[in-house]
Length: 123
Image 1 (cartoon, rainbow, N blue to C red):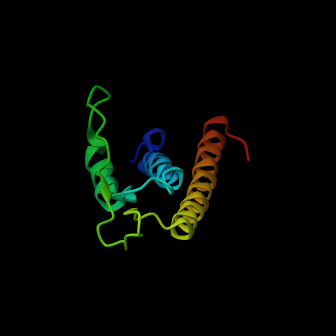
Image 2: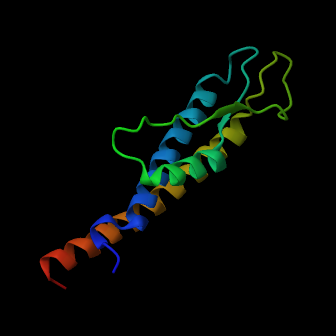
């Protein structure tokens, strides 16, 4: 019988939310450096980070947290000042990332509410 107190769905959602939060920071850094000559837009390697997060699922609390890989966007066109930051593209990514984060947070909230109802025995 599965242990509902350690629901892998809740754990997976929480890990995914953390990755979206970290990605938001990387994207915000790109926006903050839009006027920095030579700055290369960066992106969190989300697929790799998500895979690592789920591989570490069985790790103990003492296991060191792995920092997701942040890579420079080597395919982005350079402006005259050498920067690769496209403000419109970064803002679109920030918006999409934020919407995904909110959707995942709502799903996580519902899962926790169901767990509380099961514990309390209420409907």
